[in-house]
Amino acid sequence: MISLVIESRWIVGQLVVRNLENAVKTQLQRRAKRHGRSMEEEVRDILRSAVSEEEIPSGGLGTDISRLFVKAGLDLDVPELRGLAIKPATFES
Figure (cartoon, rainbow, N blue to C red):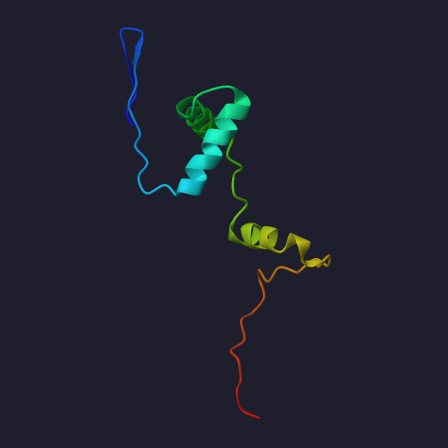
């Protein structure tokens, strides 16, 4: 989809979605009917909402991983390993 502003007028592109499941289409139609608009307008509204949401900046890989396990019940802080000497693993008994 391409949109341009030329001489204060929007030139709007189109978006075609292929291979959409019938169940998804039916749900979109029902949702549009509930909101009193066409399915096309409903999809436009969904897409506008999706791209207008402010992105939350990532805190780094460790922060992202910890968010995945928030509900695991771990409430202890895990100490950082920065500045510690690295020791190779020993596999001999």
